[in-house]
Image: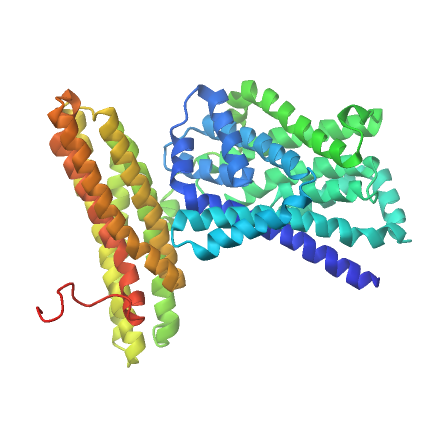
Length: 553
């Protein structure tokens, strides 16, 4: 086979592996995103407990980086400490290594089963969560298929005359091997994919252990770089999580590289096959990292505070209110509309962070957090004012009917987002403060209902922002259905609340008004979010302009 065809097949297999890993992660986030975020935010058991939560989440999401970015976001909003975030990320690294151990098993016979079931679930089901199960199953099938393709694509390389020389050089220069694979892992944004690739090359006899071990250690160091890169725009406390992980990971990787270089330890204890030796070494490295990290986390926190001090400056305050509205394109309506949509999306993301935090305030109000949320609501109001004025400027141009309609739709949705900010600040926060002032607590069952509704609305908020960006009819239809589901959930919550009242539950009786207000408010927020789907579905003739039956208008 021509060398270019070999490289083409190998590149296609690697890209399929990267896409499949991302596909599984996306399916998990869409099916269980709010629940996964809540499990990290509410984890107890100290640093060891946080590490175990991070481990489980990484196995579900097939990404330690996703857990690290999630933890960084919670630290930025004050819901997690830096120490807890580092513990979660170190645990997630071990969870990611466990995923590699499972995927390296010979499951090729199951590829048709995963692909068939995944396609049926994704294409035939109308339920959003079932479709995401299909996405996850398809992703697993594609991972296994890509690993099989990598094995087939590398077979001709065994006869290469150039490859042995390259491998021999890398065996003699482990630092270069370490650095090259660390950079490749950062570019690929997936340590799972890189370790699986190294294992497959070793299994095919193309990568001897002498070169594979430095490469594996480089992949582990590169994995730490990914989260540092992705959180570079966050606040200093948030960036301390991946930095603390990278400091310890880099130190341990360099120590392991030195031991390998000087002592050349026997890898036979890790398995009989080269690929299993690589995977097991990856597991041992991350297990040792976790054991070492837990007692050293306070030291890491102090080191990161020195390296990333939190500096409050006037310039930073101005940056927090930076705008994406581009006034230089106001004379070009299409570009100006796109700029306004970008700013509305930014506004929606700010609301999403506010809404995620409000559940903690409802449970245990924190004066500092309440003040921060009220400030966020004020910032949302400022953004809405700027968006409104910008859209008015666009409207002064000679717009086509389609552009004028789009400006009107964006104006309506921006108004609704601003209303959601007001509802959070004036209703939910006031409710939380009233509850705290009166020394009340929701019943366990009542609190569970509120948390379930909050998680549902949180997921719908992300779906609404996706619909805003994509304009996808299927997603808009899913969002519209959520309005009816939310109505049913509200009725179910009310029925269960009335049963608790009739049963004489003292907590339910004391917090009855607050409980009903919280449920109604969450439903109201959900209804405002659904409006982004109306123009998309109306254009397709999928919704009526009036709910009145024909002949009664």
